[in-house]
Image 1 (cartoon, rainbow, N blue to C red):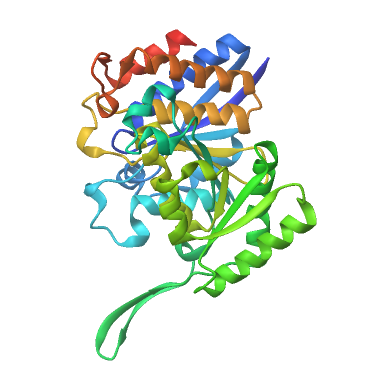
Image 2: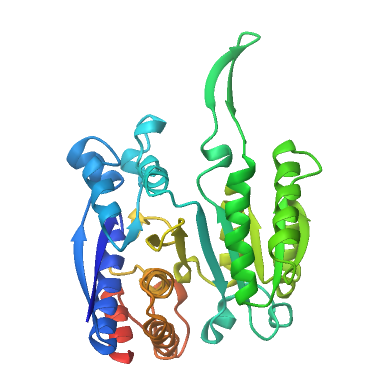
Length: 357
């Protein structure tokens, strides 16, 4: 029997609650499909700052590097908002992605049939089934470029720098093309090549990789502002989207709202190896921490993605997706509550998904 080593970064706010539910589901999936999981906890974000004075202790990096994969809850909260930028919880998140060399972020935006009514878009716009995959470059661009503050003409000024190298673009392009090849062989590269020099290199590089290595995949290009509009106007036209770090951050959140709740969407951050970092795309929601109102489904679905992409347990991954879909027919957490279905707590939703596995 395969036994996998998983590091849990529960983080801040609702993080510990939602990770606990995902662990229950993962453990049940292991029992059903014949694999074992050894869990180890580590600190990240605000909890790490409180305990060690830094948002990303070296011990956490070492544990994650030695694991088969990592499951993260959420980091951040108003408690740490007054700290300098390089000492805030979010710096730990950027740091662990960089330390593990996770350059590709996969964010699926999927509408469950049971949540179709929760989408802000009309049914005729959504169409039959919505399943868009946003592939976001994760370790380059403006979030990692040179930054600083200075005085210009006697007034305070600040700057951030967007820079990409051709190899950084090539490797994210390959991930996106491979993903598109496995799906419907359609890839849309999103940039701002009419204005930004970094986007012009991005567009040319993605086109070259497509022509040389993936001639069977249809490549289109779209400016980021147009893409933001098209996602709510005609989301059916998209299958896989690949884009730079900052654009992907924004577009994937927009795509998530089409699904009806940000509490439903999982994500995977991958590098060149099998190990990855899996997390819900929502924040730490400190205002509802400890109240039982948190929605654990995005974290549970993130655990499902881990089984699929890192642990090579596709049957277990599909079983988790099916169990979540079945659970939505019976009950809802407060964020997606609807008339006629009982409203349950975070823990009750975790138990329900387990019972349906």
